[in-house]
Image (cartoon, rainbow, N blue to C red):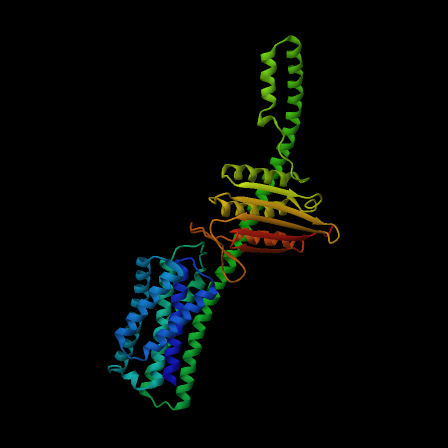
Length: 436
């Protein structure tokens, strides 16, 4: 029974290390549920094959199965999948051999520790802790810097020392087990101590990763907030400029109308024709007004021009009073991100379209924002209600939807979305409540 538990724990450690390794080098191609199902199934298979007791076969199936996991779940390139599977296999074999050689040196015998199931289990756990430590070093040194924060020096030292102390304690416990009389109760206590030591290592690294993730998200949100404030200020100034342009255009029209009348009286037909052409120029026409919010008019006008350049049909229907109570910053966060995502998704689609609809219910005082757009590829979901970006520029994405959700929370709102496979369109909806 001890052997079965020991081998099971070993494969759990190897699975966690491999999963963390793959996710550090690649973006996920599947949902977390799919990853978990394949990882657990693969390592259960390796656990079953282990009992054939063929060392070289265990190493080969470890290599092949990890290569498959990397290829199917992450890389999708066979060469890189083989390379990373080889890294994991070599690290696993080398760390296990090092720990066993050190134990044999301390005990003055070839595989003496295998004669005692408890000492063998302790050596196995110690070698896996060392393996986990080596994989962590590879990740820290060689993994792509995905907006990773620099850890504080004291915490970094703690991370480095904890596994090394664990390996040292493993060696000490093995020597005690082999050189002293250890009864069943004492052996169980020592084995439990090793299990707690293993858990401690996992907790330390989990705390580190959680802290890094929290700080990364916090800094991203702060940067996004500053960007939205700057964008809102830009749209405000642009709206003022647009309003001034309307006044200027109105005055110029009056002057041109006067010149046109004078030219008619003087019989200068060519001057009259030229002035009429000037008045019909697009630059002399007022901008399109979608609603009573100048900032939103600017945003929609900007994206209308973008859609025109990308051959995307752009439709807008905003009902009266539907957005009057929404602040300038929140309008920028909501419509700026909604339209940006829609344009990126619809670009390249044949007969692409984006439809923006905003309705207002006077009884419930609620605004319903709907953005529907055609998509070139179906969206990928992460299993936690979020979307996985298809961008491969090495940066972190997904802040846009978080910004929409944060803006909606200011109005006790909700954000939802769905994908229509048959129509190949993505529909995003935002419900806001007017509490003013």
